[in-house]
Image 1: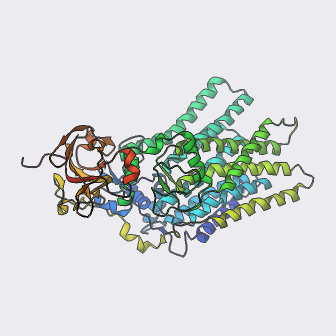
Image 2 (image 1 turned 60 degrees about the horizontal axis):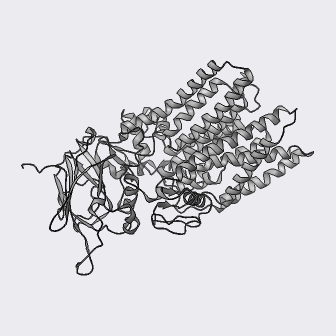
Image 3 (image 1 turned 120 degrees about the horizontal axis):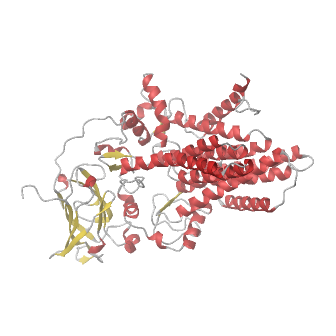
Length: 632
């Protein structure tokens, strides 16, 4: 009975007290950040996660099989004959048992924000249990739980874009704490459990794969040291290590399998299929075809990443592609850039440098032959944190050096790594202060700069996206998908200029093509049915008041096309009296040959992308055909 009030044997922290503290923390954060601004307003205005949980309850992965439901949110996609969301299955899976319980009790739904609060309380409980055994750990706990970037994103709009970042940060905190706890008291069973947990992170957000890999590597190093200390036979150690790799691979395999079922490829996460409004068509080009930034030198890419992380000076607003002067080091090369809330500033860079210097000095310094258990644990904690931070941060940086988009929310992917490094610096400083004669007073004074910096960072943070969009249940009813039969429709064999009434009214259909003038954007999105080929009839666009001057033409071979994830092979380009006919062969993959399919067009060469990003391409599309006309 006594152990019920303690988290682990020998621990001095009452479980109930920690649970109550964690719950109070979660409730206070959500209330003061206006995520739950008033009683009853605890539902997110964003529909995708709720729709995904509803699909789970129906025994499906697709949100709907009706293309009209693409209207529910931007960035949804039509894949595998269904509407799919691209923000991961982890959050809907977390919500699933609560939603099922609410339905069983006769309630219409379980509040989204309460599910977030429960996850936050769980993460806070793990953090408090890991760090509140010693006074020095209190500083680390407050740093993790009141990290300024976390609070700033909670004060923003909190749609699905931001909500997944909060879950990512909280999940990474649990990985940090699990790695530290394992390093203190190595155990193969704990190691296997930690590997299994690390493998599930990618279901929440793909970048958690990097944190999972860092967790397995650092925890594995702790187990290697333990095996050497206990003289575990090499074959036994190998078998146990293979078991750990299996448990880590299991979660990642589940992620890949779900990707295969939802998007058609083990490695696809949906971002090459999501449908975009006209203002974001350059992003369609960048994610489907190619992007110029991949060819710039690594040094230039590193300068841009550093500037985006620590030196961002202004917000982009709606100018995602041509905003200049956002931060020092910004490359002139065309790229999607979106910054609308504060992430990190130069003080974080300074603290990271100090953390690395402190870790290096500690590694080089000869340790005394006799040291207390507390000193040994403190050193283990610091080493674990800095190794975990360095490895995960390096993997994350290598990834973001070569992606086609850079945004404030992507920079928040670094938050767990930065928090771990700064926590290691705090512990190093506390270790030095603890050697003083009046160490209690000195430790108390050491909290002042830590908390002052955190308060200053929270106060300095800005968010240009508005307050959290939390609503009552009555405001969500219109966004609930009610499964039913897909409406029958008569689909044409082609789209023609001036025949807008013949284009099926599917959300995002013919985006990037003005069906009255025929003008194309740099990219375009169409829906076709049972494509046998793809044929485009083009003519050069004219400019000027009288329309007598031709646009400077791009070459017809610049035209590229995809059906879903498959590039279409160009069969021929024929010159006509007024322009060209460009014909592509039909898709080779059977899944793209039947049924409703999304088609993506790139209309200009990569080198001209910046020139035409915010205007029309130099083409008029007169006709788009995909199989022979009926009756011919």
